[in-house]
Length: 479
Ligand code: SF4
Ligand code: SF4
Image (cartoon, rainbow, N blue to C red; front, side):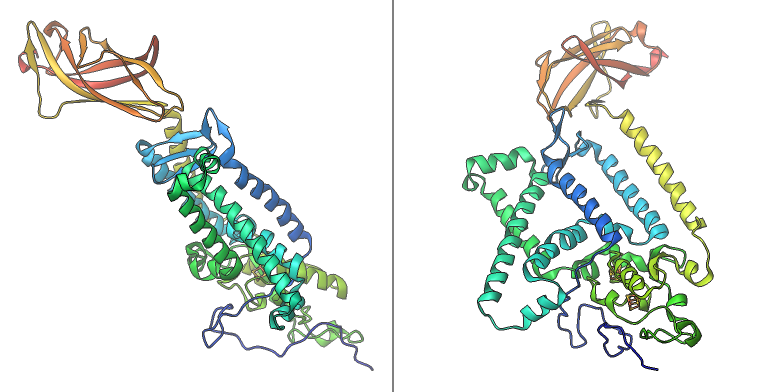
């Protein structure tokens, strides 16, 4: 019987490593040349990446009620999320959102592993869907790239490399501009473009730094961000368990009774006891982090699904069922257990629901104008004629994208008088604040205790925009 071997590239078996996939045993960089992925998941990821990239590039240039759709101006502590402006006064909302983000991500990871990394993370999207595709278009697939890397610096290599580096630079520079629009605001960015970078030197230096960082990351550092630098990747070890869904190799099916083995056309594979893995190593060649998924879940795996697509193609070619590498939990593979919500997932889910409820409640209570009125520290009260007087300091924060005009205070309860120190009416600039002092004078007949609550209405012109409360102190004898 002639043994016909399928025309896959076979390599000598490697023993399992104790170093990360991108660093050689002697500590050098092991540059990865992944094969160009193709298949069902890759097509779906491409579609999602178009949508996410369009959103990322458009969001800082969309305005809602004059507010940028998304802005994170850390230096001036001014944020805009979905067109809602947030200021340092809203810091508690920011902290709560961060906690919700962390708990949500933890819950998601416990249940569905690193799906975020493969489908949504900007690092993966830029690397796999932008820079890598430019590289494939200019330098060709894995084999051609490896040959180009080894060959002499001839005209072809210089032309291809210069073209690639130039396009990488253009993409990095464009992305840095958008990144800057998130940080300083798109208006500032457009001003810098129209007035010239020399008039906005600090922003321009920032732009050059971001361009260099993006270029460095996507041209050279690449997958090492996920493996070495990303804290989320490092958390996988504590978040994942054998019930979490991951990109996984079905070792029960793949190894069979006698282990994986090459495909021999004339062999009865079932009778031989061989598993379905034909050891073609295409799943390794396509992996952008250079690992062998058949060794189990590893810290380098970003769940990009390239190995699923590749293995499915191989299975189709050799007439075996697809899904040897697929989304599955270890328990599903080993014990044939279907996915279910574990106690840990339910616990995270409950905490997340409570936190989300609190956040939504706080967002509903949040106002565009925030007035704080406090009694002047160290002052009790004064007798002024037949009235009792208290002195207050106030602060009005305008979170709107327009000026607040003609602001005034009125004592709503109890009956009395509110006397401003300085101007009776004042304006508060957009996203600005105004501070000042006023007196409240109340006749003792309206005091029913030595400390009562008073209500002050805040007006802009004739429109009542807010109501605030504070305390008023009087002498004990009025009890
Ligand atoms: S798991 Fe699939 S792609 Fe990987 S070596 Fe086996 S058959 Fe080939
Ligand atoms: S092992 Fe598979 S899913 Fe994980 S990074 Fe490599 S190709 Fe992507």
